[in-house]
Image (cartoon, rainbow, N blue to C red; front, side, top):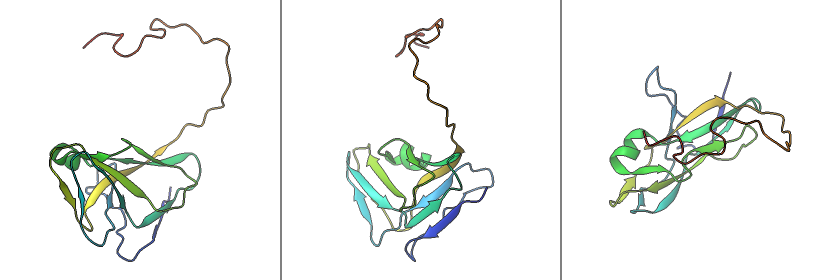
Length: 146
């Protein structure tokens, strides 16, 4: 598979993998000056790139960088961003500061990670009834605490 990436601004950084075993590619802040994410505030950070996935069998998913999330409380505002195969606009990352301390995002900082993954596209069939299982409609802790 080939992933086409277009720089929308000269200062944009093409996503990179930190190590050969990294599943995700780091996305970089393409900003001219620092942006401060105040406690419990959401900021939208441009990456300066657009991508072209080859077909609908794959999508790109934007996840938190664990270091930013654990150490500074910064995580994608929608938990996981989904980039559909037919989207050609700029990848923007909404980050929410879940901590009580402001965090300054600097130009070129790694702000999230993007993973390309297969997407199952099932045929949708409306059903009058669903098959029975031992669990049934039990949810939200119905299988026990631990």
